[in-house]
Amino acid sequence: MPNVRPVPTVRRRRLGEALRRYRNAAGLTLDTAAEALGWVGPKLSRIETANGHIRPSDVSALLSLYGVDDTEVASALEALARDARKQGWWQTYSGIVSPTYADYISLESDAGSVREFAPLLVPGLLQTAAYARETIAAHAITRTPEEVAALAEVRQARQSVLTRTTGPLKVWAVIHEAVLHQRFAARPDTMRAQLRRLLDVSDMPNVTLQIMPLDAAPHPGGVGGFSLVGFPGPMPDVVLLENLLGSAYVEGVDEVHTFADAFERIVANALPIDDSLALIARMEEGSHK
Image 1 (cartoon, one colour):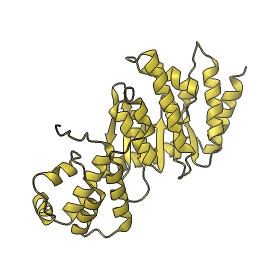
Image 2 (spheres, rainbow, N blue to C red; image 1 turned 90 degrees about the horizontal axis):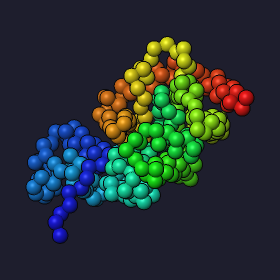
Image 3 (spheres, rainbow, N blue to C red; image 1 turned 120 degrees about the vertical axis):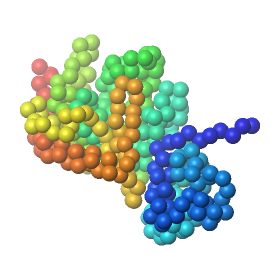
Image 4 (cartoon, helix red, strand yellow; image 1 turned 90 degrees about the vertical axis):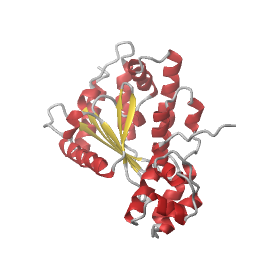
């Protein structure tokens, strides 16, 4: 049976990048580090470029060689190695969910927080089933009705991270006011129910909502939306960018920091939390008239 090359995933890339960073800090070349552990061939290179598997015990050996004795770092990296090929509930939809989307769902399941600026849509974690179906049908223009229905199911299933027993995901979403004015001609109740959903989830202690008003001053969000995914422990954050053709990740520490700074400025330009919820409540009440 031929060997199957591992498909690089975000988990594997994050692990490889961290190991490369610690090796460089220790002043070791790829060859020197591999030789010290008795490894032959390009094994370490494949690991660092996310094209090779690594066992948690090998992660421990590398960190020892690099002089990294922080137990929190070791635990985090060993967990990444252990979970690199972990199968999640989304594998049931493997014929529908793209590899990039599956990567993001796995990130979301590992994450401790998500900070999102949403200039065009209500964030997926906060959508009603009807809103999800309508918007997916509008944007996934190459998908069949059956695939749209399946993707809507996936979007709803993702929301379990908000109530997971291992520690609910913390979500801070800044939604542009224009999103709240969206209407669905065929199903006029869709937006009304979505506004009520936003008010309901705002009661959750792990969810923070703000609205970017129509008359806001210019801010970094003017170039588009993004999701900043944060992880517990020493692992660096990741940024997700989306477009019609799929998703892309920003993983460099300095680049991610730029988005974190941008989010702080976006928050400063948005309505305060109480004012944001009052605006949503007024719009929800007005939708009944």
